[in-house]
Image (cartoon, rainbow, N blue to C red; front, top):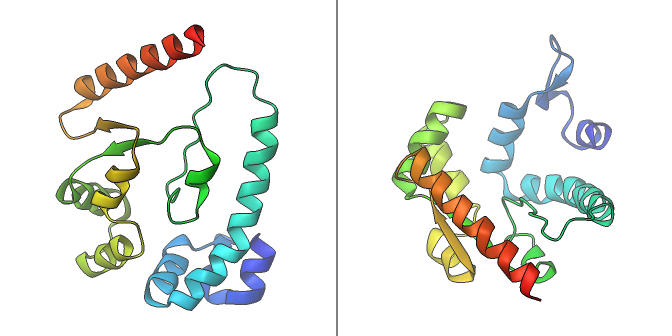
Length: 156
């Protein structure tokens, strides 16, 4: 993928000192330019899908969670049995993104605009875990859902 990214986007998205992809530069470019975002997706998504498909064929467990941040955007929701959304209010998501990635408000706005909105995401969910009341609450929800999934598998 890096060769294709370099070929299409050039050295402006690579850090010459580190000799690696400059994710911040690439993010800034694709958030400002929808055509660049589509091109990046056309490079990455087929590779990601092939890797996921290969790994899924190797799974021998009754339950497999597939973590796909852009599940609805890329149309993969039709390939899964159930959709679990880990949800948090946009204000909290903004705070986390600022702390993690140091993006500006306008960059976060562009990021959110490129994604399915919260209401649509929630409308597709079979289950929702709320991630806005601390870790212990989050872990309790995860444990309960895991038990429900296991019961469903055992009973079928």
